[in-house]
Image 1: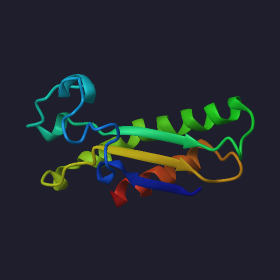
Image 2: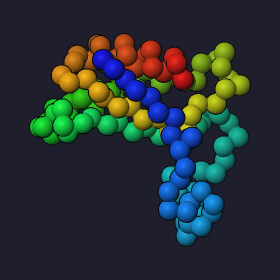
Image 3: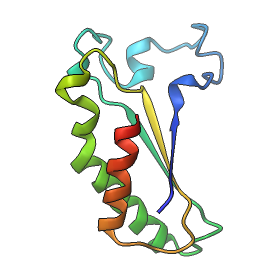
Image 4: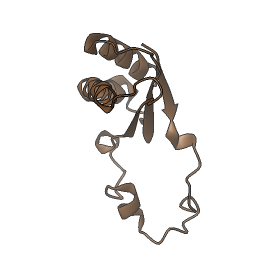
Length: 119
């Protein structure tokens, strides 16, 4: 399995939101509270992409998305390890499924653990 991680916090924000021109307050746009003083409460937003070119049927794409989402849910504690309290997790993470065939949950979970350790 190939998992490509993208730290979306390095990407520019579209539609003028980066410079404060958005008509919505920060709490509404971020979907959470504005209190970011405790790093243990900050969970990164995740994006899961499965290519329609490689998997024509939506059933197959959804199956892979569910497997990736579950692997992340079970292993997201890797981002909040005790020895890395000084390092904050990224604001957003993108998981791009680049394999050409469906693979088992065990293989996806193994790749997820390796990917989260690299963050």
